[in-house]
Image (cartoon, rainbow, N blue to C red; front, side):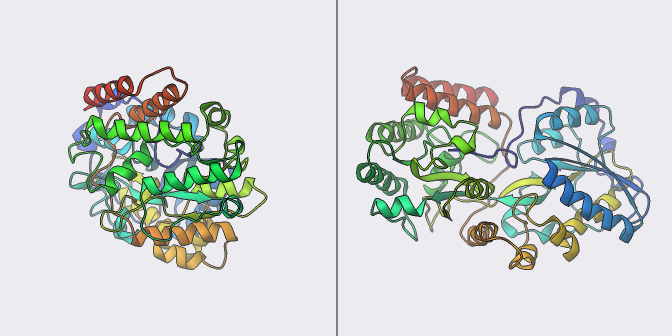
Length: 425
């Protein structure tokens, strides 16, 4: 399994130096506020495709709004170190691309502006399920720039050969495991059912939510019992033994390298991935693949509309209204929407998805259609990821691998997992 973490998680960046920011910097509406003219600074992470799209949209906006937008961008690696340094020096750009995992830390250190009531910015333009993704308590510190959601990606050719089918409606993890085992039984020793998601915290959270509760309490504490994690790890251990999931050496060959993942190499029939992972997988394969719902419950939707990235305004911005107007333009202006397209991920508004329909390739359209489906069959998370989430996510992946290679027992993994969770709470 290959997961693109750009949108959901940042590396654990310490912001200890930011503590010197004073409360007077919060809510920059009290500083110079202007909706047009002047100068703005803006920063984002990404590569050439993101930069090309955003620069074109910003060039057009500069002419329209008579404002100069100075731009900074870096790849994911390096972006957070620079932003932390700028923030500590009270020199962060006006408009900042943020990640959901980082907003609580930056907001807690008074480094971001509350976007509620910012002139020229309407945070409710994004899908309802995304409107609170940048919220911390009763304040809003980010508006979603692009959305994604977890999915089950399928290789129809292998599924057909194995004479199985993925349920169209509601189904659970046990049913998927049975399908995965049948794929291996039908197709032989070199093909397995699905990628090993035992170490994927996002998949575990999907299962927990489908059971009717949140993974975290509203105050950020782990909301599952040790026996629930034990059952999850045991399920994947059994799947590896039965061939429903690949052995650890096969999984590790493609770790961090989508092109060498078992699914792309057509050695598994199913894989879990974000919507942009599906698009990337499709580009690497010479045959069609499909995207659909992972195990789900209509009564208790496990899925949520997720923020691939968010737009925030620095607490030290001297032009909060101008920054708000720029964010609103990128989200609502037809020309800006068309220019940006899917470069940042799936657009977070129905307006944008409708506008782009018919102007996308088949894979992009399938990802967009899937997001429309998720918008109707999902439930917002009860809170943003708390402190320590990124470390806990990495820990579970390491533990699942150690269990698979018989270097750690499941009991020891569960004990260590909850010890880490309690330490960060």
